[in-house]
Image 1: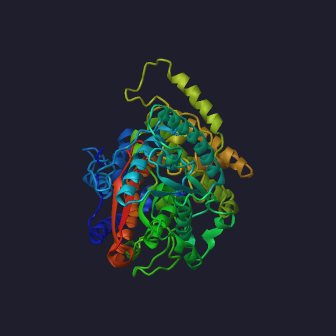
Image 2 (image 1 turned 90 degrees about the vertical axis):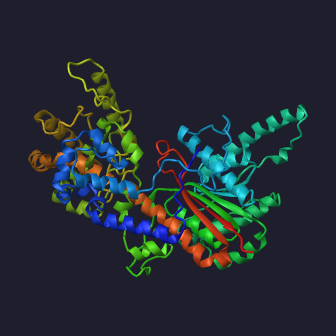
Image 3 (image 1 turned 180 degrees about the horizontal axis):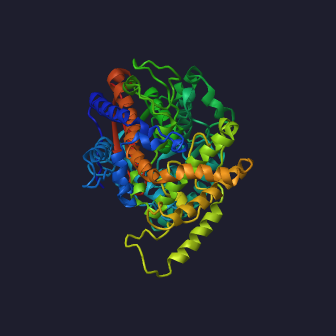
Length: 587
């Protein structure tokens, strides 16, 4: 497989690209700083060129879904086309194309059925590619030790252990995940021992000692001084390399994340002969930043391989235009001095938007997208009700959560039965086919998480399946949508233990927002154009952070090379960018 490399050759070229992105984002802050609940309250459609909205209102829903992929229609305004195409050119291109140094010798070992048990097709694709990459990097850095950070149920560590014969310490904050990893390791070890016994019977001499079973550690590794926990795990690898039978970490050691680095000096003195690779598949939030810091500060870590995710969970510091830190210097973003100096604070809305996937937008069904746009509209209209009739509730910032999910699925099933009956008018584009699950689409900024009313978009609570096409302006559809919104509102208010407003008050609020429903889809589609740009800004900040330290500290940390490449197929795994950094010790 070929891979396109995003190695900017120097910190200056990386910074120049970041500056270009920052300047572009500053021009369009009303879009990416917007929040779904503010749409009607702040009249967000007025912050967009009305000619752009007119173009999109005349376009198809499928045209909207292609916007985040950089596709604009030829007959649109030149300024709109320039916006879409500029955003696409600034974002990191995610399709694997050109071979990179770290991947040039990569040859994935097929994952057998035993190791693949429990893996989804997506997870299997990710583990096959990442495990091969980790093994190749470990070979190039002359180490067989891996710390799997944020290991989850241990899929990566188990493949590295049993297929690549590497010594793995699997670290996760959840004790249940560690237990699952241990149980799976026991079953897999029995299978491999049986296979080894068969090979010995036919004259091939393999010892069961050749098998490496991952060891698990349960501890929290986050921001702040907590990055010292990863450094302390070098002791665990030292024990494993000495074939120690004692536990990797005792109960008291699980609290090592709260210790100051000076408390670790004595323990690390015995690990100078141990080298390791840090690996993390979709390391959540600040965990990715912690891995990069550990790599730079712990010279025993010869390489770090990090695929990040959950940018919405990053802690973000506020920086002045001079680049001086004004809050916790151990925040997850920004990491580099260059990005701090730019002074562009993304905020929660910007980081939420960075999580969206252009590929998921592109592959979504138009009807599924319409349901998401209407759920955005309902949530924004509900905010007006809360502000007008329950202001104290808005201050308390409660959460509605997911309501009516089972009922919504029944409605979807009923709709599929109805649409299966031939009619005189059928859509040639397939927009009359309901999607399997509205909750799995990504046109909603927060479709997978129930957020607080003041901070995050809610999933649709109990919505009927709408008819195909954008017919929001018809009388029949407006009545249907009004009824759906009333059901949504009743469910939300019941969940919040609030009394229902009168029919007159409900009608008044609905009539005030109904004329602007047609702007919701175009606005949120334009906003999604900036999602790949925002993600690129976060990822390039991490690359620049490594490059800055390479220039400033090469005499003490060794020569460091860093790359940012797309590893997975983005249509399968949207968070597909991997940072690969390797250390060559100073002589």
